[in-house]
Image (cartoon, rainbow, N blue to C red; front, side):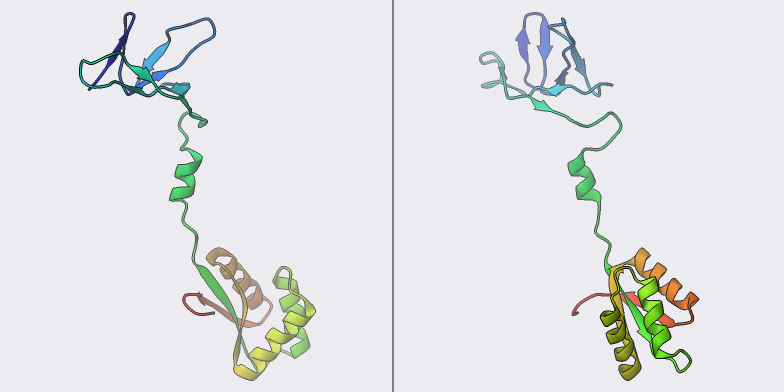
Length: 158
């Protein structure tokens, strides 16, 4: 491991420079409680020349928390699910339209009528495509109101 000597302090590539007001030589090695500025040290080669300080990288994370980049990288997008309305011989068409408008956020009268008509003539219709948790909730509310519904993964095609 290459090091650079400045005065009496030995700097290594993993040294974290954590200045405090009025303190010119505050260094901590390894994980520090208060993350400051990470200084990268490099030399021309083993035993050649003095160390060169590169541009400091300021860490904006709080102790014990991952950086925003790590959170975005580890967060996976949930696969979409279809909420499907099935035709039944029990509920009137007007009632189905009312329930769709009540249960599904942003459902317009025209969309509700189209969904109801498609389910009536084709046996089923896709009500909405959303995250699995939302799809399960919409399906449950449709069932609570007496409509036949199910969910399935929205993989492939439309």
